[in-house]
Amino acid sequence: MFDVGGGELILILLVILLLFGPKKIPEFAQQVGRGIRQFRKAQEDLTQQIRDISADVAVRDASTNISAKLPVVITPPDEIVSRSQVDDAEPDKTDLQ
Image (tube, rainbow, N blue to C red; front, side, top):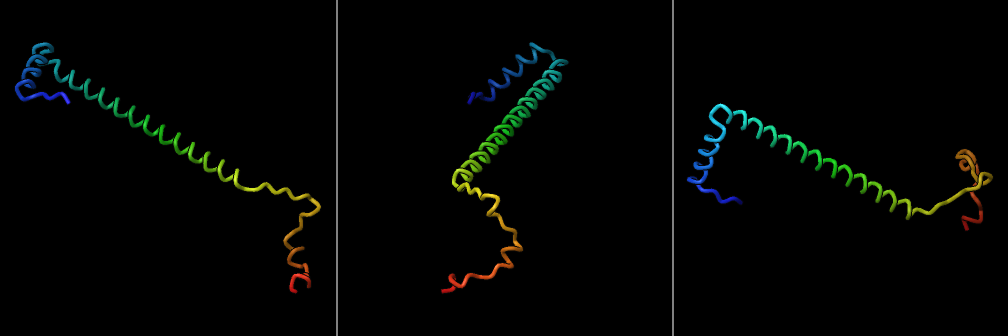
């Protein structure tokens, strides 16, 4: 990506040492480490939010597709029978023929 060789890397580290001094380099490294950790945490949080939203959309789409395919059947109250009435009913003789 940056294509930095060994000599160039030593030169960069020397310039950093001259600019910040030996006492500031550990503090600078800690701050860089914290920044990288915060960036990764924010990236993971964003990825998780995107996954959650995708899952919610998939569930909504699935429920919409299922409910759109199901027929709506409305039974009038006078035609509703209990399970005991169905079990007690005698079979029709016409159905057997």
